[in-house]
Image 1 (tube, rainbow, N blue to C red):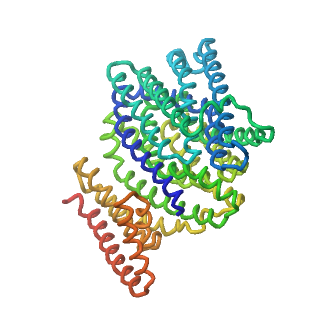
Image 2 (image 1 turned 45 degrees about the vertical axis):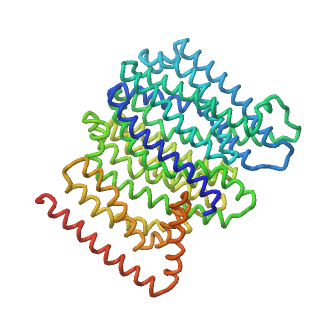
Length: 540
């Protein structure tokens, strides 16, 4: 993996881990303090807001990071890009806020969503403006390749939200308290982010006029296609919650959102790759390095499948334990939709980096078509299944919609000019997941103490899976250390030494046979242990 891309991925993944931890702490607190119904109302509002913001900000954020990353030879290119998108962001933010305010005051919101939710839309009106500049600042920094600045801002956003919202909700502010947390955090991040942008490019460029050959038409075309693409993606994320709110009570929405929260934990690595690859692969596309892009895409697909598959197996094995421990006994209805969502979450995880690499090409009609087909399938199935089956119907529909993304985007990628399955080894990865799943599920069923199960099963399961993955050839023996070598020292340097030694050994046939024999023995032992635990577990 190219080290510049790898460092960007590491910066984003590190942030994702921190945000994941903060989210893992804050979400169950919000669920408990708001209750299932209040959490359902909050989740519904955030889904509506996310869909609305597509038309306000998606073309801005995708465009600024793509065109800054291209670093064209035109005079003052970066200054003109920053200024152009800042002006556009301001116009759209003010326009979006005014439209939302008119909708709230005129009674449109009350007639569509009910009187109980209309008051919250006044808070969302302010959030439109602050969220716009928060996202603009972060994506501008990413366009400059400054993930070391943009990613800590995401942590600041999450921490700022938690610090304000959790106390307010705890002391009775309800959903408004949670929205106040978002408002405070977005103001803070926007201020810090714009100050960092100003250090790189003075924001006085907002008032400078670009030359006549500045590609405004190209940018507007990319923006419009990005809006369509993001809208389709957001429909996959949020349409199930919006539709469920119309057919079921807020408690069902809250429990379904709890299931989604756990399923979405599978995505933190794919999201990090998607975030970096949009602008990192733009340079590769501009150089017509199709073979390099295929190599990068297929290896990423393989790693994404392996990481996400083992997480899905572990989460499925521990679902009965994790849901009530994490959200409380009130959230037990979330267990069934969680299990139904996991297969689709795995497929969506695989699709995300492929989509990002396709976006880097700049030709969006094929990714838009692929996403559009999946989105239509998702909407139709949700409309058919939610009225009859409620949460479970939403989970099945969304899982199929998510899973279809992978198939459609593989087709789209080949049309564009790269093959994400060239070295994906999905069959071997699936075999490794099945073999590792037996001892993992057995171990989870044997350990009766909930906290002990959560502490033991994930690390043991991960090691078992890595052993099987290497044995069946889903991973080369040196690859885990190659991945670790991109980490900061001393981990990176030490892992690189081990990687070089293993590479030398595996080039020797006798050493390779010895490693395979050892892994075979370990695999048979783990497989037999899993079967034994499954049979004897209830008697131990």
